[in-house]
Amino acid sequence: MCFDPNSLRPEIRMQLWNVLMSHRKLPVPEAGCWLWDARCDEEGYPRLSTRLLGGNRGYHAVRLCYSLYYLVKLSKDTKITHECGTRSCINPDHLRVASMREINEATNLAYPSQDTETMKRIFNRRAEGVAIRQIARECGVTPQVVRRHVNGKSVLGRAYLKLNR
Image 1 (cartoon, rainbow, N blue to C red):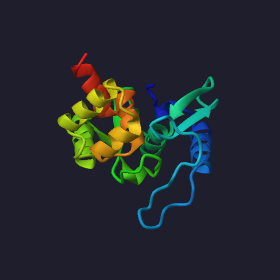
Image 2 (image 1 turned 120 degrees about the horizontal axis):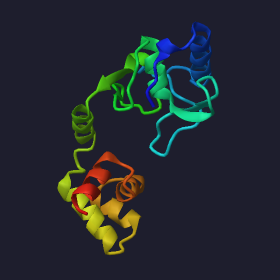
Image 3 (image 1 turned 90 degrees about the vertical axis):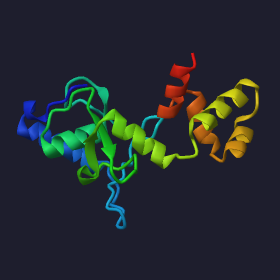
């Protein structure tokens, strides 16, 4: 989606902002995060369905929030990252435009134990029919992390699958 808030009438922009703000929980005092309390996608990122933009399709609430707050047009290739590290945060002060390289580097810093050897072990053990919980214990991660990797729902899992097909 290529969203340009400047193409909207001011009253529509205000209505959309109000819809976004109606789905935020009270800020987390320690971090200042505005946590999303509505629907999220399978990776935990906030989603919003609205007719204000024409049609009734889902939008990434983080992208809408950033775009509306800073009044900037975001192409579909533009990546927004959370400086706070909280996926459900929609505080524009915690969001910034980032390159894919920056996002990958941040992911590697956040999950240092999930290097190439760990990924290889996760996929090999799963191919051997080992249970996800057992793999998680062996690799020192949660079963959800293993599941996301083997299902290709994580950046690292998708990269591993792409390289090893």
